[in-house]
Amino acid sequence: MRFVFRPASPDDAQGVFAADYLVQQVGAKRIGVLHDTSVYGRGAAEVAEKRLDELGVPAVLLGAIQPD
Image (cartoon, rainbow, N blue to C red; front, side, top):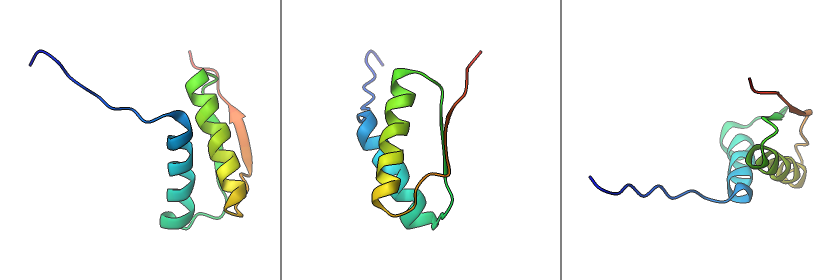
């Protein structure tokens, strides 16, 4: 195979999907959001936190971890 195409959705779409899935499919009531301080991770986490607020399930934690 000469070429591989891997579609990737934007950070905002991934953050919204994660929040929607956890609340609507899993039924989570207490959710913590962690990111790895990268631009991608921070962006997705902030969007997820905003979406959780919109769904009425605010994040109980928003934090960062420092990768090695």
